[in-house]
Length: 362
Image (cartoon, rainbow, N blue to C red; front, side, top):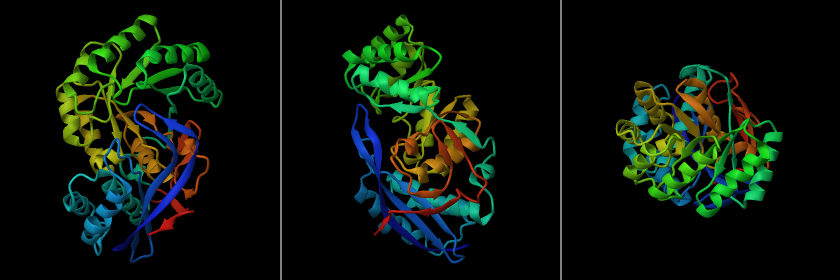
């Protein structure tokens, strides 16, 4: 199975409601789709979201990285040469992790098709059903409480609450949500780098004293501030999850060895795809550090790939793959089945994609 062409398209999927964090507000998923064609007629799909405020990758940068650097080094290569191809992708251009992830995902899709097996089975086969949380966007406390009630009514047992945009309101936000949904529902909070270290310690201790029962706090401080992240980890009983601070296996090793966080969040768009994400899983297993698998605002293509990684590895104990259920429509036929909080992996070869509608090919 030899690569004959790599095509790029664009997809736009409106969200049910605007997605708001401390960093940005988004109303639609506007992503790049990668299609790798082969001499056997098999096709592999990948995806990359332009998330400049997190990865630094814009639409133009992703397209340029693939067309001008990665593509020319992969045409003519055999899919079975997985290890070499992953090294070629990495050497083609520095950084540009989202572009690398899209190509990586499409290659893994073809790898599964080559060996007639779903990727989650090829990588470990731990489980085929996983349960995701759902994100509650940062808004006024009353609106967040209403959104939380709606999520619980739809069956969600874990909510990820966005905070960090207005610290004066953050306590009120969690208070309103707890009063609305009670304490049988797990709450994890995500500040998206919105706090300063001492500010984070102060607000988290207050949440502890009130008894909000927070599962963990995700990325409370700026991504580059590893010392600040460690300060928060050392001075709160609420576990700390490193997200934007961890892009590479090297980042994960540094965070773990310095004990700057209690947990690691893996996102394929940060790691450059499944290949490096597997390395982070191995590092975490060596140190006994649990991982969460997360996503940006992405459609079902790349989130299916993330779900297969979660299905393969037991070290991934927390799931944050709600991107597809936040969308108004699903233009992708095949892939994982997203039924609110329940994600089911199929046994179709690769990732099981059949077709993608509404793509504008370049």
